[in-house]
Structures are given as C-alpha cells and as structure tokens.
Image (cartoon, rainbow, N blue to C red; front, side, top):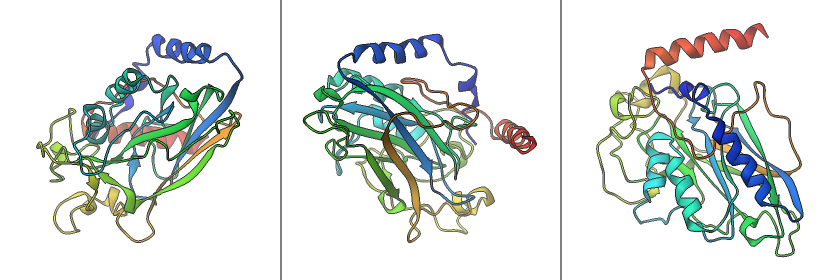
Length: 286
C-alpha cells in the first residue's frame, strides 16, 4: 500500500512563500474564499489523494473525453502527484491562484474526512472567474475525478461578484485516465501495495468513464476487507462534496497542510499500516 506520510516531513519553506506570493499578486478588491472537500465514501470505501485546485479565466482545460490525457493529469490519475498539473496550469497563463489541499490527519483524505484551504482571490480579474479541481481515487490504477469543462464552475460573475460553488461528485462520474491497465495488481496499484510512482502497465488509451473495479472473487481491490465498500459504480455511490465559499472556514485538527504543486510517492504497505494505527490511537485519546 502506498503511504504519503513522508510529505509531513518534507514540506519546504518555499511552499509557504509561493502561497504568500499568490496572495500578494491579487491586490485589487481581494476576497478570502475557502475550498473544502468532504470524502463522502462509506467506511471501507475509497480514499482521495490531496486535491489540486486552480482559479482561471476558462482557458485551462484539464482533459477532453475520448482524448489522451496530459502528463500532468496522468501523474494525478496514476499516483496522486500534483507537481506536473501545477506546472501545466502555470504555463497555460489562464490563472495564477492554485494549490493542493491535503487531508486533516494524513495527506490522503479518508472516507468521512474533510479538508479545506483558504485563498485570497481578486474577483474583478478574469483570471479568477472559474474553478477547476482534480484528485485521484485510491486505491486504483488510474481512476480520478476532475471537471472536463473549464467553464463548469464560475465562482465570480463578470462584475466580480462572488458566486461560489457547491456540488457532489458521484461514483458514476469517476474517470479512467486510459494511461494504465486496470489490473489491480498490488505492485501496480496506488495505495494497494505500489512502492514507487509510475510502475503500472502502460495502456496508451484515452480518458473515459471508469468501468469499475474487478468483481469480488477476482483477487482485486474489492476482495481486500479494507476496501470492501469501495465499489464506486454501486447505485447512488457518492465520492465527494466540494464547496467554494466566501470567508474562512474552520480547518480540521491538526490544521491542513497545503503544498503548492507537490506530488506523492509510496512506501511499503506495512509501514503505512503501522503509522495509521498509531495515528488512530492518538486520535482516540483526544
């Protein structure tokens, strides 16, 4: 199983500096808005990798159905890495403000958990008008959620008035990046035994709706008791609720760590299990 806990030890000082730089870049009529993601999966359901978000002028198109994904989306979909999509966003010139939101206890966001980040955004700038997001569904080979329509979520109107956003992503909307074969072999599958990023079997396909995990009894993800309720293709299955609200919202304890353009890498499953056990025990004592 992959573990992303090393990120807690590797948060560089420059990440906070980048956030401050973004804040200073928006000086005219800035407002504070908060992006919140809640993992709606049931117990023993899907986890989410840290959520990448960006504000832009409608010119940043994350993916197009039926077409190959960009390298940045591939890294999100296969490994939960956000450095490449962050670079693609910056290079697009469509926006300035972006960030990666980690979970409240571990970098990944477990079922039932909520994570938030506050941004300072100038609604009068066209580069702040629309909101986009992307995160990986784990465990999986290359399942992810993101908006394909860059105009889907206007958070400011043409006059700079705040509109916000509040929507739920269903399991039927989970995407397959088409970059890695869905074999669910632990060594190839993030959060299921994969030791290093980009170790699966290349598919060379195109993005489309995910067909779902291998059926129970095939030795795949759904046969693991930890993920016995992770069948996101089940009727009514909800993945996440994402909101964009004005002002700041309480951030779960311990405070969410935010890292701009930072990716994830894996370590041994046994190490991760021991770390989760210790953290769960610590939470129960509180």
